[in-house]
Length: 396
Image 1 (cartoon, rainbow, N blue to C red):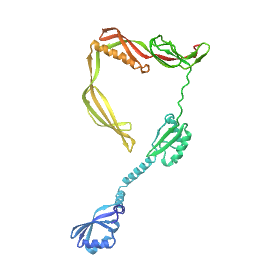
Image 2 (cartoon, helix red, strand yellow; image 1 turned 180 degrees about the vertical axis):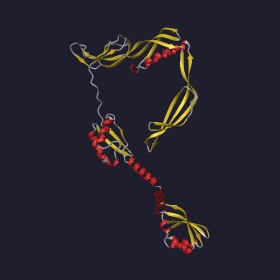
Image 3 (cartoon, helix red, strand yellow; image 1 turned 180 degrees about the horizontal axis):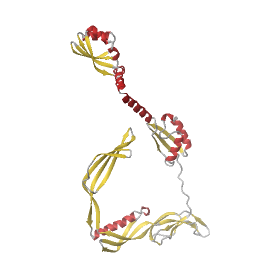
Image 4 (cartoon, one colour; image 1 turned 135 degrees about the horizontal axis):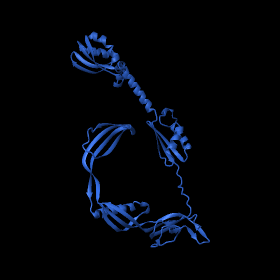
């Protein structure tokens, strides 16, 4: 017989030959040029073999001549598949519609991705791409050559040196390479650096300008630390004062710290729920029933489906419901005081723009009343104390 692929297209049957001389029938079939294969003798009067569909109809005269009976055991190949489809017309139509819809959907652009843009807005790039025929729900066969589109987009978008376009499945990827531009420094008017608080200067570094204070100098809020003017009254030059000045500043806090503390405890009881997610809808599939606890926290994890690296708006979601309880702990006075001091320190250290360093702290007053500790605390902090002040309008 011909190759299996060709036989499947032409169609073939598995037959059983029973009679007086099955071997004679086989020999005559081969002599007549019929394609047979997979011959299996069962006994002296019976055998099985595969024969092409077109040769099967030529086999009947030989069977009569040799006194054999031919029975079809199995049918194989495309002709029999078509015969089944004739009986199931709606099923065949459904297959055709599905394949046609799949082909149509795969021929559309579903998503336009942009990478490499730092200065250009994504909306501007998408608008320029739309003018050139690249946008969602566009037929891919209507798009012109990507090299032509890339050249036009490069000319249309300012500050772009190169654009690469890649069509990958139903997605179009635009890779943008922007031209490097020198950093533009903002224009600055002449200025002084002044103190932001009453302080004792601990460090001064004047990069531009003339320092008016020294280390260990006492300064008031608003005092000029680094002056942005060189020269005397007759010959002056105004500059942008730059530098770094640190000083010791005193911060006063009024702290209220309760003698009881409420905190959360996980009991270990857990209930899990699973959902199938399609778009923005979720269908629960496990974890039905009433919760065995009243207070709980929910931790959610979502696993989105993907096919060949493309995201699909479907997946699975798991919810982990963990029972919690809230306990109340009584604190002694030193513990409550420590918590209050830590809160004050955190407020200072949170101001990272000042680069603060706590040097000393002193409790000026504390008392216990109505289940709370009241404290007045003075903290000495080494921090940046310089701020900009424009010279324009000061008569200098």
